[in-house]
Image (cartoon, rainbow, N blue to C red; front, side, top):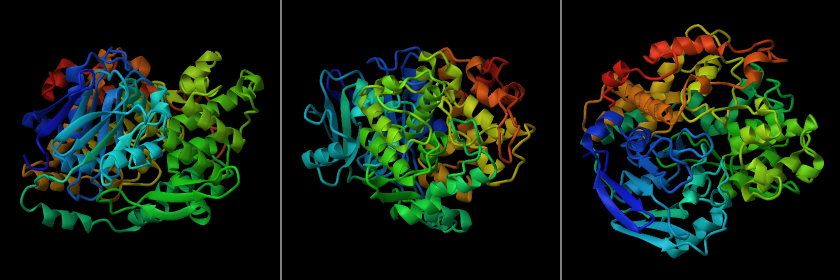
Length: 596
């Protein structure tokens, strides 16, 4: 095989058995890799009704055929499992250097099954595989864990690990790699913690083959990364979205009660550059460099690391009504070090702030005042959440379970119990479908219609109408599932779109992938993920949004007065998908996609 290594490493943590299996070539051609192959394996190998934190749940960590090839932005890997946060399929994406290192060691992916009898870490040194004792690593944060594992293995090794949040089964726990890169959403770090697996260290020197002619095509595609959008990623990173979204009134503020944040200039991309930026950083093969290396010197928030990204700025900033970029960055550093999803943690704290404002949470419950705009309280509660300390033990369950405990679940800004992201769908109607139909819950990366509605990329569409949004959402969802399966970062397709990567995929594998093949693969992945969720008990009733989004008009800004007619869009969307009115794929649809 070209592009793929053709090998999968299966690790049984219960009996310390590691075996190498051959990657099924037919599956590779139909599902490409990464998200596609991992989702197919998850559906095939586990009961969708399994307890996510039980030994019977499995984890599939998959690269794609373009991961590590030198393809522009070809650094991604996926972690697929059943989510403890949502009960749905979990699929968390990360970049950095760990994925390419795994490919260089000779593996397309790793399957983790069972539970170790005590803390372990996995050491992959090309063909030499070891499960080692991690007792002395347990309790360490992700940065110290990375340093210690490198010292015990190879200074050049790449490390993916969990922090205290994963060990303590925080439902928003992340897997961190290369110190500050994260597979964050869905609670995949808690699943890794439930298996007593602290880290996976990889050293790869074997490499893998690509088809003849790939280098020339790669140079051709790399030269396309020019223009204002590419420059914007390099100059501001993802934080450039702050000003755009605030200007059109969809920058979620005050726990989604408002769409414009007066303090946005204090937490935008320019504020990062002026106050905390050290330099930009890139993942393996990246031609954009959107990561920000930052340092905070303000007393009480001192620290250094990476970020914050746009979504983190919203979660710890506008939705908590905090306009101090130093505090936002500090909360982000804590999330990286303890191993947590910054979006879910920040939105959960905002939910707690609203419950406090309503008098449902008392000062004695938290041990401090918890008012909107209190940066010190926000930072302290971020730390407590990762350690499950005091009130943090409740915050560790996420905003839905928090609000439900106090009798107000409608105050949780979630879909399928996952906190929705930083584009208010009342002013960007397509995002209503993006959030509600997303297989892993209220997340923006599975077909972000806001790029068209707000930024006009790749085409400008009207943001406040529902006509055509079902078609747009389905198109972008299929394309996103395909690019996630290749091992390429979705941001690359914001700059140059998808066609160049279909050409690169063909060049790397030596197979003739057409655009139709690529889109059909994405559709196949989307339906496999839907089928897993259906078997887990999900249906139309779960394709939902918070009542605030559906019934409370935005109170200010250019999108003032807007709500969302979700049911009409769902009817249109299901029909286009070839699903029944309850959102279940029909036999005809599955047969047409070759899904048993």
